[in-house]
Length: 232
Image 1: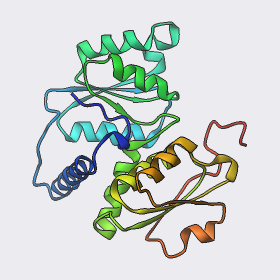
Image 2: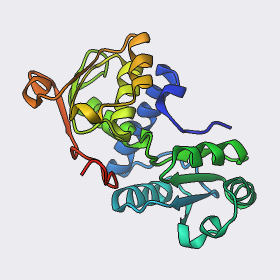
Image 3: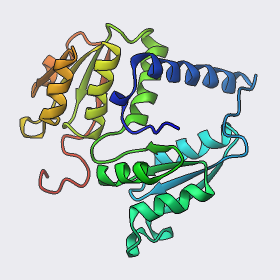
């Protein structure tokens, strides 16, 4: 059993294999040729503590296309908001479902769920990171520009969860990443130190023009992330 919590927990080869599988399945789905159904007969619980149109639709459709049954659970559907611990929730859900996906606020909630679940747990977003978003973005980069190594990307936005996952991806795949955002909202210092100690080509600026100069891919976001009332 393997959880999918953060990109840096996986080797480059393993992440590339996931991307290759995704690209093959996407092509087969579009052509009507059909593909493997790894979730046939399986149920995927999807916990949405933090709602999202795109995450819900993409995950639910994806599970169905892979032969599985999605079980959508909001915070109101669970006892989490009424005193039941994350540990107990993990144990109970593990008895009934085959995979747990969670989109939540605190990264610690995800880690606790994964620690106590006996089925795979997928990070569909926390305040710390958003690895599934990056896997989708990396697939798009491959489709338009080919192999990831040596490419260049500009991230325009604050150092939020998506930026964190971009940094991890840049290290694993060896592409240049330029981050343009407010100086007071840079990515976590510990992550930047990890990236640079592992050969990451990461640069920070508050000048958009410098970030986007001659890069292949530009990714945009808000300057201040949703829910960051202090920053607004």
